[in-house]
Image 1 (cartoon, rainbow, N blue to C red):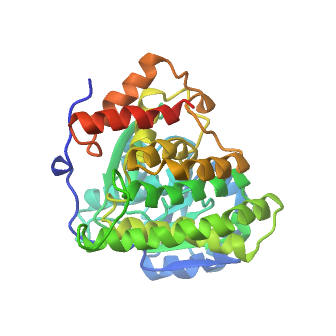
Image 2: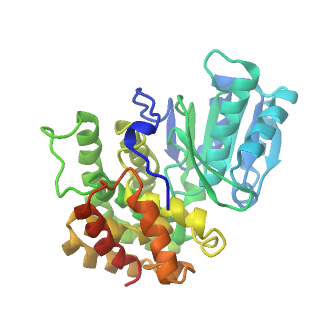
Length: 378
């Protein structure tokens, strides 16, 4: 049985962190990288995913060389581990680099933040970290914006989050690159973004200022707006990316998936916007690492959203959500992500979810969770 946890046992930074010193989202944004790096230092250490680096088509190298900026490059295909983050930090320092740059998807974004943190520790920097420039090549998550790194073992099992006391110094979103990514990533980011409103309501059918912290109410208000926009424009954006078109719908969804989702996280101090859906993601990565290895963050989070809606007492919203997920060709159940819904497997998830901070230790919530978890197998 999982060991019980409470919110009081989770150390949170009291500061609100709203995301980034500078956020640039436009066509040809990669051509601004030299200027942004120059604001922060002289030599970047670049951590890039292999597919992501290829997707930039040499434009980052070109703009840095034209500006006379030397750099060190690590093409990294692996997991975001503590060991590798410390190694990247050490290599950056040895090479005389003073800025960390991440180029890639969520794991690279998290690796660059972790490397910047460990670099700051190794150098005993007063600000506690090396400057960070994030260049997301996918809008599947808000990882470029969020002040935390989700850490993993080398095999891909979740180790929870390394929470940072700093924001990103600059985020550069090149829409030419984003419009060329697989539509699967756009859909995943939309479902991950939609989860914030649903999970913020964990066990409640409403959020109001009289009962909840003003930061959480602010986050919820933004999340409600994004939910409406996703419903109205999300399908169009996915189709436009599938057609390799850069449209206003794509621009809008990219902004919501990265910037607004990150601001929502900041308004709730990086914690109040997640609950059972994201906890389910962590547990699946931990207990079923190999079974679910081919599925990305938002897809796994989305599988847990019907469960979260049921737990909230909002089962009437499940049909519309499932219809959207089907339109996006996303998985709906544990079986769809490679996990056999055996009694043993479901019970393993139940025990850890019940002993998480998101479920009260009482018979009523135990039964409510049992009922809600049926949506993982329907």
